Amino acid sequence: MNYKDKMLRDDALKDKTIVVTGGGSGLGKAMAAYFLELGANVVITSRNFEKLKTVQAELESQTGGSVLPVACDVRHYNEVEQVVLASIERFGKVDVLLNNAAGNFISPTERLSSNAFDTIIDIVLKGTKNCTLAFGKHWIEKKETNKTVLNIVTTYAWTGSAYVVPSATAKAGVLAMTRSLAVEWAKYGMRFNAIAPGPFPTKGAWDRLLPGDLKEKFDLAKKVPLQRVGDHQELANLAAYLVSDFSAYINGEVITIDGGEWLKGAGQFNLLEAVPEPMWDMLEAMIRSKKEK
Ligand code: HXC
Ligand code: NAP
Image: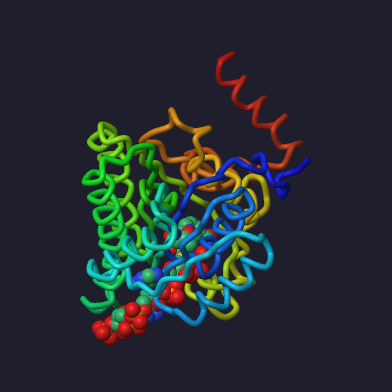
């Protein structure tokens, strides 16, 4: 066994319907594919319907599952409400909302127009709010229980990060929403959790965060104590567990899957990693000699 293997048993998500925003590309598509393999019906949404239809055909032939593609810009509440209606019409109910859609790009903040900042906040924070409110209200009104919302955030949701300030601001808000509703809406039978991925290469993220030769200049694997980037299947394994009934007692949690990346940046003396082994004899001797005096 290794981390690229599929973790849960075959029927782990049988009879569940899962809505994956941004499910037509990158990590959303990888998670959707695994949910289908585990027996779920999946609704994939994004702004690009043609892309979604292509991915629907690909995922259905790959997994034998059922995929409903629905065009929706998460920034518009009326479009999100249509996703609720279309999903119910096709599958009868929805059990899981996976808020995965996002927008991001690197930029010095002073170069951003007000609209550029708003665009990221609107996709990430307002989009997650729109989906959560539309599905949450539906579940409360119908008195349906055993529902799960899983939000994809980032590790800079709590550390903050220069050069992606709108994204950091929005993801911090999504994390606060996750923890707040985990308490408030537990009484309605909903669980709220989040995943904070470290670097998992996708075209969408890499084109906007590491354009041109930045990919070569900033090898993100080197920032990770485990010296590698993430594999899509290991993220899909974690997501499948968190939306399954096996995680029924996990609520209000954010699970980091980053090989230790953010802690490496945080620990004050982590830079001592650069000290070569033989030098430690000398350093130890220097420290001990101070005590003896
Ligand atoms: C400065 C920029 C810009 C840039 C766009 N804008 N790109 N400003 N630098 N590189 C400005 C525009 O000029 C405009 O402002 C405003 O932002 C909106 O741009 P539009 O192109 O009109 O918006 P839209 O078509 O809605 O596209 C949204 C987008 C785009 C976010 C700009 O990149 C997109 O569609 N992204 C979706 C996918 C994505 O971002 N995936 C990566 C997620 S990765 P003005 O003032 O001119 O009107 C992620 C990983 C985190 O989140 C952690 C990784 C380790
Ligand atoms: P991605 O492929 O670009 O995924 C973003 C998705 O969001 C796309 O499918 C996009 O589809 C959709 N989207 C963007 N704006 C939208 C809007 N207004 N309405 C509806 N859908 C919209 O990038 P990814 O790397 O897989 O990112 C997926 C998630 O993981 C994001 O939440 C991201 O912040 C998070 N994340 C990624 C990494 C990483 O290393 N890759 C690390 C930490 C967190 P359309 O363009 O077709 O609309």
